[in-house]
Image 1 (cartoon, helix red, strand yellow):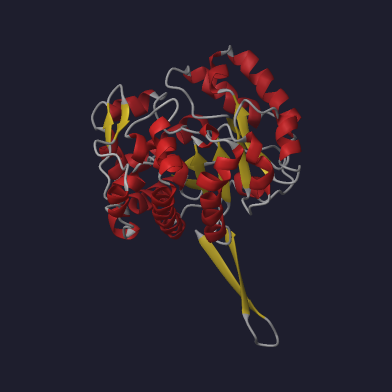
Image 2 (spheres, one colour):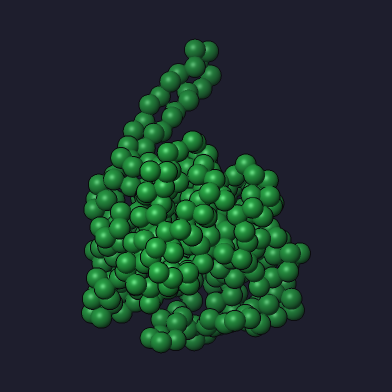
Length: 362
């Protein structure tokens, strides 16, 4: 819930409005502002999902996009990990590929395969057929899921909304499926850059409208996932990815905190730190010391526990998490994984990760 207060400047030229969140546990939001905290907040990427038995029970009844498009299901899945572990923030259950679906691009989610786009965009005609939709119509189910989730959370903790970066969305739209190299996506960008940039701009414009609608619906922060940014060289990253992420940050930063997570993008941390983002996600291949150095040491960082390390014994997980916090420092820091939680992580190990943060400093 937003509580608004207005203070008029005596000369009458304008009115300054301040907004405060009535979130009971606002540790996450305070960390994004860079405030001094008693301990860092914690949440896990992909925390709403595949490692939880209560999620599997829903998955067995409904296909993937039905879960995304049904507000009651999406909201229930979002709060499942909060009930079990008590993270400091929830992230809405959805998928980055709802954006291309809304843009007139068919997307399927095949069991034991992943995303599949039967008609990939690989030429100017394909780009011309991509639309910039009315997100409040085509993606209204996401906004309804946000409202339903906010009711379930009851302002106990913040809710995070998210989107894929334009480059990452392009990777799927052009490749037609997941890939270890996204060779067809890179070929398209390098051989047909005019069409590629037109597609990237359409995705960017849609993403900005989508995230703004999410903020209006009630999310307290947004995260941009550049999952495949590390596929590009530093020079190509600026041209085909980060300039579009910058547009998103510029459009959203005055409305809500923006977190940018670029997997494999350690080389861009310096530029990211100057972007206006509130926080930067870091994957597990970059040490806390290097992440602080590369980002200039003044911005909130998020990460970066190797998701596979959650397979270690719980006692060892707790020691490693404590060491990680010590190396990042408890302030200007959000504890998280370096990528999404894996499906086969034992429940007690996930609990050890969260508990280690909650017990930090005690």
